[in-house]
Image 1 (spheres, protein in one colour):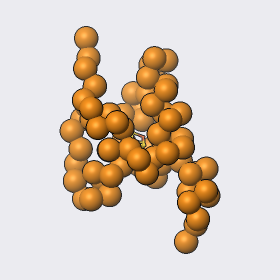
Image 2 (cartoon, helix red, strand yellow; image 1 turned 90 degrees about the horizontal axis):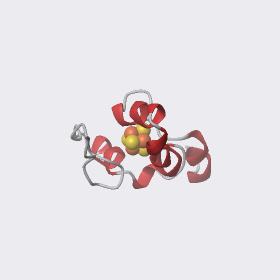
Image 3 (cartoon, protein in one colour; image 1 turned 45 degrees about the horizontal axis):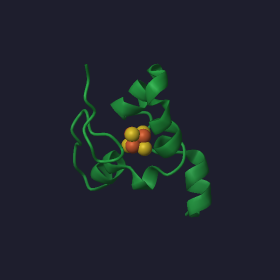
Image 4 (cartoon, protein in one colour; image 1 turned 135 degrees about the vertical axis):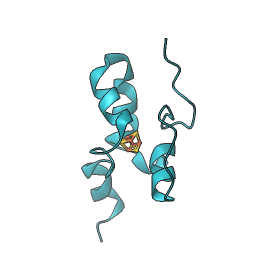
Length: 71
Ligand code: SF4
């Protein structure tokens, strides 16, 4: 099993299936989330925690646990 530092370097294991990751990639103002969570502290991400618990998080759930407001 990889240690925490190696896991953090690899980034979130949900990046290929998480719709938020794709959104963070397309909008410059959302890049903060990708750098803060997806590429580093993903274990603190509310979406990650929800998926690891076997749940399907709401589509607009941000890593912080708040909902993204569009428009
Ligand atoms: S938003 Fe959360 S679950 Fe989705 S890729 Fe980023 S860290 Fe992983």
